Image (cartoon, rainbow over all chains, first blue to last red; front, side):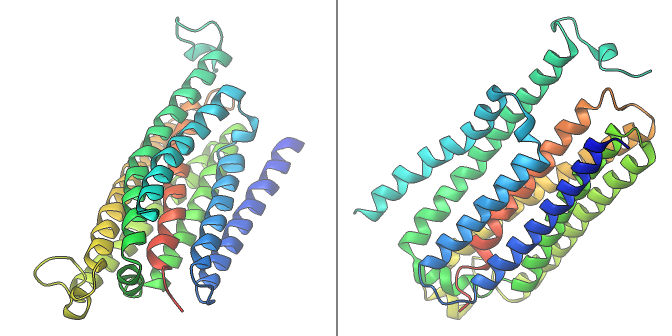
Length: 92
Length: 214
């Protein structure tokens, strides 16, 4: 086994542990009274989990720049979809 | 020897270029998946803003324990997927097949648990329509919450089911020795799909199970 793959194994296991810890954090935070801040906390944790999965499990960190732009594009369109829709209903 | 060069198609100059193109294509497809689910997330956000009480009340009726277990299962299946690809890179064919099988089994467990949840919700009158729970019916937004819950989790479940099919095919191909340390692009693309399905659930979980638990 070469050193790189040993390192990869460690990375994968650490990511998995981090994901489970973040899951526990989200679940626990739901039982803390934070009002509308609850959703902010849980969405921030979900984004952190997504970054871990995309960067390390999907190996996006090793991809070419073009691929990274394409990967982020989907989320960019998502923001363009949701933000103006909400800005309408929130300011009515 | 099964190498990337052997799989080189004539429209590409090098194997490197071919692999890059394949991954770029896969990420493009995944971006369309993000937007497909995105439209539903947008509807969710819109109605959550309009009916905060209805969402809070309805969310209390979802099964917190099962939802959390399902999330842990999917997160773990992403680990076994990554390990399957690593095993291929190390030319460990048996380990690849085992890890792919483990991923598929975890996916099936997810589907199984969610099916029991649907059944439970059916008995608790949580399916919108004529038999919808009387105490929930009076609050605006509860039926919308459950409609979106079923549409989004069913669409996600469909993706998991397709993913399991992909995993089974990949496991059979691995078993037959179709992938080597030098060529395993289909495995990587299948893995990307599986991870994306996991990401969708990472957002579905807090949005449906954790709206109001205090």
